[in-house]
Amino acid sequence: MREVRTLTVDPGEGGVRLDRWFRRRWPHLTQVQIQKLARSGQIRVGGARVRPETRLEAGDEVRVPPLPDAPPADAPRPALPSRDAAYARSLVLHEDDDVLALNKPAGLAVQGGTKTRNHVDRLLSAWGEGLARPRLVHRLDRDTSGVLLAGKTPAAAARLAGSFARRRAEKTYWALVLGHPRPQDGILSLPLVKKGVGDRELVVPAEPKDPRAEPAETEFTLISRAGDRVSWMALRPHTGRTHQLRAHMLAMGHPILGDPKYNTPESVALSAGLGLQLHARRLSLPHPSGGLLVVEAPVSPEMKAGFARFGFDASEADPEPFRRPGRGARRGN
Image (cartoon, rainbow, N blue to C red; front, side, top):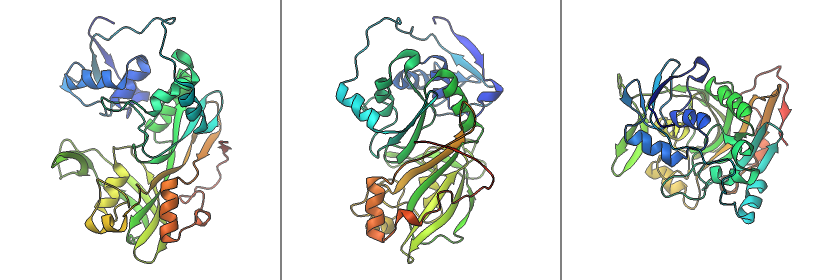
């Protein structure tokens, strides 16, 4: 595409991130290319500069600059090494004609960047290229383990992404946190904003009337606790802000153990030798072909280490701590 165009966001796409909105329409674009176009101001929303992670609203007008052409369908592509393809397939939790669910390990980025060459998006080449290539429909932090979904067709990816945008996807995370939250269950509604802190960018509670603030809501409930030192929590984000769970738990005074960014001196001392104690345990959402898909990820090595240190056992947990009766489910393999 060689001309500048202005496109209007459809009602069903409200809440979708800008970078994902672009990649649904132009799958050949890389994350790095979209980031550069946004950073240089070539992509704009309502005439204003925006970040790739900006959430679009229905009716927003998006400036689309001239984009690089998609490579010819028969153009040779670098083949994913067989070892990497085998590794990608070893991560599969569930696969059918529409959906691919992976067990993302901690430390593996979901998408690439200027300094990130190995990531889940690259590994999806194990399933093919072009229309055969699965499309990611949400993200996890690099150091968070657990369930990650992709659509195996453009239509399936659009339906899955729509479920996330309309908050029909129920995500259950497990986390080990400092102390014993009181109350031990509830909903925290606390707007967040990105802010430079020292030489790092963190997500922090927003000041009243901050125009950059993004609404953020997290449901939480206690599963078990080790005295007053550590609690095993189930967390359910009702919104999908960057680092939302980590920032919210720190704001509550109960940071997630093993977190290198959102911590306190006490949580750092208690976390010695542990990785981030945050795991995307379970995901439930409408299947693109009908019914309900439920996928669970086994406890990660990082969480196993935390469980062993503080005396927890995965069998203690209710599979659905935020129980809602009367719903049948199609379970992932």
